[in-house]
Image (cartoon, rainbow, N blue to C red):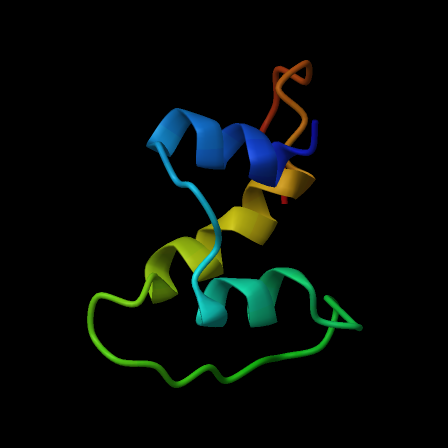
Length: 64
């Protein structure tokens, strides 16, 4: 199970919204992205979900 799937389970999400799908599945995650979507569409989670994939909970240090 990916981190994003874990987050979705914890948060009670059934499926990603269109903006979340676009952000999570983009081809080059190392490039900047501008996403435009209406209020309440899940933009904040779309921003944070990929960041959580980079965090290693086994490391006891600040991670960038």
